[in-house]
Image (cartoon, rainbow, N blue to C red):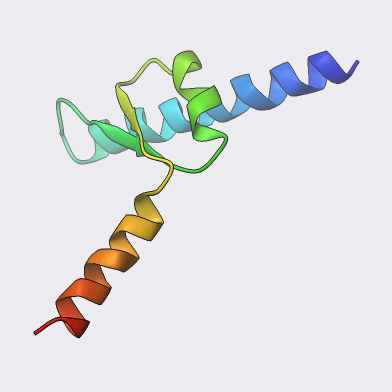
Length: 74
């Protein structure tokens, strides 16, 4: 059903993100990582992740604006 597909997408992405964070922590011997989820779907996936995450839907725009300010305002 459509609900089953949607559930699979959300859980599948949450497990993939958690798996990558766990791999990164082990590979680089980092005890704690705070990941930043961006975009519209990030907010839906965070509650299903084991690892700590911060949600920022405008991170790309904020970064571009920061670059603009550094280069265009003297």
